[in-house]
Image (tube, rainbow, N blue to C red; front, side, top):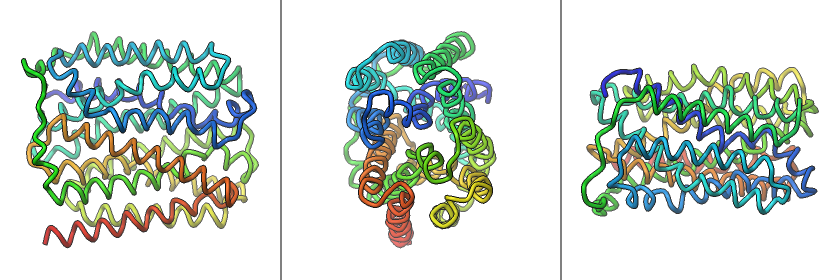
Length: 380
């Protein structure tokens, strides 16, 4: 699998499953209103999904290690599509929460296989660029998936957003089934991970960098729709446009992160975190002003989109010959971070108000920067 086309097909699947995970971000206020619950409680639709991925990620990959890789990719997308269809017809919040959690078990299976393929089929000097193609699926979910789900909620209902997401997963399934060639089968015997990798200090610092970075990103971004609604006073249609714009500029940001992480990993990571901190400070001071907030969202999307890629490279670069197992560890770490970030953000909002939500992200960014310098000191 040396063709870039194959990487883009895998990215199409990432687009489908990531839209399922993050598509609720733009419709959380509508869901909270429909079920008469708080926005913090509705946020569990995002954080519970991420928590399942975080806890069961490596174990799911080990359990399916002997299965054909392409079959796993297709089956995962099918489960995502069915779960989204069921979500549209459930009238109980806890029932919706349970159904949302089912595809979460298969999320790390798809991600780990896709990232492993990107890394194994590219030269060491091109790995960051190959991984950035896979992460373009995540960016595309931000560009199209989240804003379209929000727009569907505005035009019809929040239930229609889940039906749209199901359609995206079906399209991705068809693409993977008919455009992706067969992938090397897993091992004949169940995967037995080499636990010695956990003695690697650089791996642990990379994981801490990834955790604090992604938690910082989602502590505020997870409640972006509610912030724009209640602080910037945008309507649902304007919010969907903002989310679309946020993701569109993110395409460039993801490409830039892939280009510079392969050449200047330390400098790129530091610059990313500093810019992310500046943006959150600008949101705090100018979030209530309509026009300035539009420009802030443009730069926010440009920077934010590179976060997962930068975090992934910080983890996988610490372990030679990164395997599916290491990528599953990263996927678990990233989703633990999404859970922690949204919960911390919800806690912060409950105590200090939605207008002060960026404070939680600033704290987490400071911790991420501290870990970056610790990792750099260990390397030297």
